[in-house]
Image: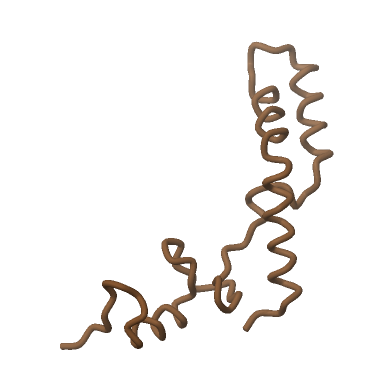
Length: 101
């Protein structure tokens, strides 16, 4: 089980990403638009740098929905490998069975 502070910090980051998403996209378009003069593009980059660091989508950590474990996660089911195997063994995940040969 992950520390509660780690999972809460990640939730806070997700909220910041959602809140600043439109502003971040608009500034990135300005900064990458080669038709604009360099001064305007540089100003857009400065404004982009002033946004909170945690509002960047790359700062979000994929964590298990059940335990908060940061490693060994499957994106499709948003679970870590340990819980996925456990639930599959109990037959709680439709279509997934433990292999045997």
